[in-house]
Image (cartoon, rainbow, N blue to C red; front, side, top):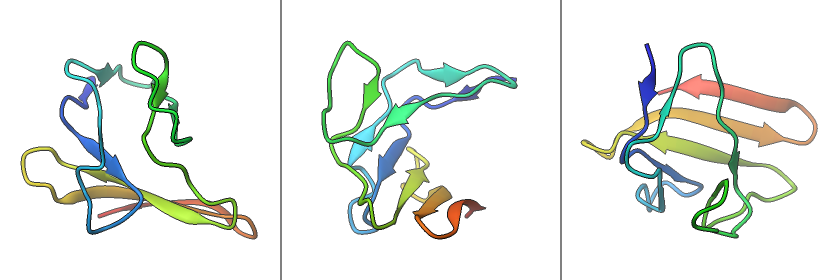
Length: 88
């Protein structure tokens, strides 16, 4: 089944879970992936670019459920240890 991201949000800070929202109607087909650029470009009509960027020294980005604003998963990126995905 496809994962519906309509209204789900991403943020790099816990106190602003609604920082950047996925476009309405966006879903990821089963066994596929989606690239989101966390580069503070926020270019509408192009690929998915957030309105925040991640630090080169390491940072986390959190996916939030749109209905409850509760965290679903966290992607932690650290230069020395790589990437870690944690379900919330």
